[in-house]
Image (tube, rainbow, N blue to C red; front, side, top):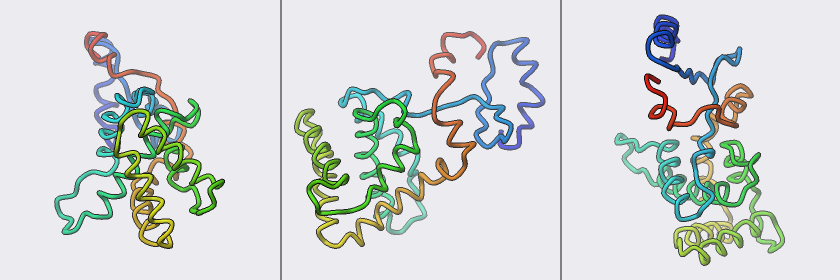
Amino acid sequence: DVKGELWDATAGYRVRNYGPVYRFAPTDRNGATNRYNPFDFISRDAAEAADQATVLTYQVVVDDPNLKEPYWENRGRDLMWAFAMMIAVKAPTEKRTMKGLAELMSVPFSEDPDSDIQQLLDSMTRMARRTGIFDLEAAANAIRAGIKAGGTRLEGVLDTGRRYLSVFTRSPNIEHTISTSDWRPEHFRTRPGT
């Protein structure tokens, strides 16, 4: 309901006759919207988070059948998944947001073992070995190799991923709307008429 016409015409009737109605309108400048943070619905357990982060990244970077060569989108999504796993499993609550994901994907490159990116990649590798989720180590290795190769191709892959995330981080209204959740999907099942 991009224009809000259906909400205006039916929300009051639906509330009176059926049950709760939720309006997710992250661009509403008055803040007349429910809030939804995808990371609120991703487990802190790595095994569960792996599947849930896959769903998230495929919703952010949607397959485009018109692309002749989807390399950049596919690789951007793969690395976004690895960073989303780190956010889901390790980040403090206030960083478990799309902005937190974008920030993590923007950590500056460095070969210095004490740099933020190298510490992050070490943590990713440890998580991979602890959980048996091989793709985390593969992503860390790919990022390390990209940094050693000068970072140009890696920067292109990460830029592709960040381009898809930018819609969530460019507007303070949207960022606020998706920083926490005030409803849960199970409300649709447990509250009749929702």
